[in-house]
Length: 364
Image (cartoon, one colour):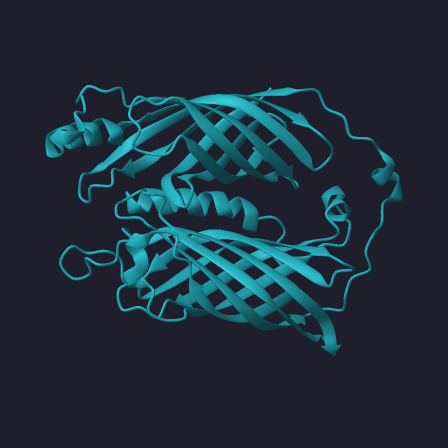
């Protein structure tokens, strides 16, 4: 199952990195140090030092040759490598690789890096040798990073500097328990180097004046994968999250969503039976329906063939109330033309992940 999980991630991020990354023309290296976020009392024993790490990013700068370049103020895109030492004997070190975008603001002095990839840990949970690592239940997991930096380029020839803040997240989406996950917040300092002279940007003033219109679109989407109940060693079960929603493009970049979905999470079936026996004081019927129905609102940011989305939902049908009634989701999509798409997302309840979802959908 680890091979299946990592294969899906590599396939998806292959779509990202395949977009003209044959001649990356910039690199930046960042050192960062900070703290682990105490998002759950159960991970307090994992916070014993100040994590530190290094992120190396290779980027291609856009110059306006494509429509989306100027729409997003000529961002960079590319691949990254991240190494992080958590300064804790149970957590060990994590290494990640994936794809990123750099977005620029304030006359290109403020940079926001959004990065997503796969990671491995040197010291995952093991019931005999590392039973206290309740954060990483599997060796392979997902990694999400945000960097907000002040950036100066070409201070000395092609060499520049940058500094700011870094947020990192590691989680396997409860593909395997335990999975508390780890979030860190840090400060960073780094250098950047442009291999080539800065390209002259093509400004399409006519395209900027074109008003973007599009009717309401209707989406059918299936999100699936495997996950495990909070009981360690209970076994992985398939889940099926079936959704229908409408989206309305507000402009070239943004769309809002409104929809509903049905959650068929098979691990809950076994978990309900376990709790009904292990905790008779709960008076839990072992035949309680494990399915759920939710309604949600969302936002989608269209870049090129790739989009980012965020959703917040509420369970209107939840007979088994193990989780809070509010859930959220963040993810990425890749569009094959105008109608078909695939994607990856993570569904959580606050900071607690429930599922890493592989999605296929149609937008009509």
